[in-house]
Every structure is written in structure tokens, then in C-alpha cells.
Figure (tube, rainbow, N blue to C red):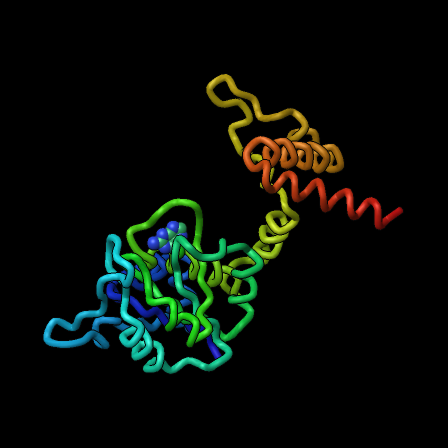
Length: 239
Ligand code: 6GU
């Protein structure tokens, strides 16, 4: 049984988009995963197939109607244990652990909103998780859905080379990665850090660890604090 993505959207032609190319595209062609779309408009009401309406309480924008979203969610053929995920800037932040959980399951049903969002009642009724991919606003959930799918598909068995698990670990240990260099050893007057040419594997590992720590402290104080706290806890536990 292959991993199954089902996407509810007003723009089905946006899928698989860039995920039809490269590694994800090869895995799609090879049947490792599938990507089905359902056009929300098919469940729209009246001559204009309206999917949205004005918000109760007033305010700007439009909201996707509960009855329309419910009809779309009820029409899809996905097992009950498959997560339903609504992509919204109001959601819980998407983390690697969430991606890993999705990738390990049978697949995901993704709901892409436009406008101001979807009536909250239908999200509750269908136990829909709400997820955001970062602190900026996109014009719709579709590009966020593509990001989520990319992150999941690369974890599916056979999609990436054997180095995939290593790349994963380096992020899930809580630090950003150290910088990389290749030939030429001198380029426009800049030398590669000498230790990397030394052949001293212990010294290289120590240099990379220090770089990872410094870069994390500088760029991501949030990750750095969490990493420090975890290290202290581990040291306490080790006695
Ligand atoms: Cl999931 N959707 C939209 N529209 N904007 C976002 C987002 C999602 N995550 C961050 N910004």
C-alpha cells in the first residue's frame, strides 16, 4: 500500500506541481506515493457554485462554509486513521516530528483554504489538525501543502539515498548543520578551513560540532536555548 496524499483545494491544477519532478516525482511515477486532488468547487452551492460566505460578526474577507467543506470531506475516500490537516497561518507550527508522524502513517488529507479560512465547526466535526508552516502569510494553503508533502515524501522508504536518515538526525539533534566546502581548496582568495584538509577525523568532528553550536546560537536562539536545556538535563541524568 503506497502513501496517499489527498488534497481538497479550489486549485487542483497546483498539484503535484514541483513534486512531479526530481526525487518526489520519480517516487510518484514509481508508485511510492500518490497525489489525488478534489475540487472544493464541486461542492459549491447554487448556479455560481459558491463555497464561501461573509463572516458572522463582521470583518474583512470570506469564510468557506461548513456545509460545503463537510460535503467535500465526506466525499473523499480515505481511511479514518488518516490525519486530516488544514493548512492555515493560525495553525500549530509544523515540526519535523509531525512530518515524521505523517510519513509513518498511511498518508494525509490536506485541506487548503483561501480567503480568511474555514468555518471552525467543520474542522472540529472532522477532527482536523490545524498546521502552519511559518510566521509569514501566504495567499493560500496550497503552497504550504506542497511544502508539507515534500517534507513527508522524502522520508518515505526508498525515496532518498541511504544518507537520508543521517540528514534527519543532524536536524533532530536540535542544532543547525555546520557549513560545507568542496574544491577548489582556495577560491577567490578564500581558503577552506584547514582542519577539513587535515584528515584528522576527530578534529573535524569537533570543529563541525562547534560550528553547529555557534551557528545555532547566532541564527536560532530559540533552538539554542532548547538544546542547552536538553544538554543540562542529560548531564544531570548521567550524574
Ligand atoms: Cl499553512 N497557510 C497560509 N495561507 N499562510 C501561511 C501558512 C499556511 N503557514 C504560514 N503562512
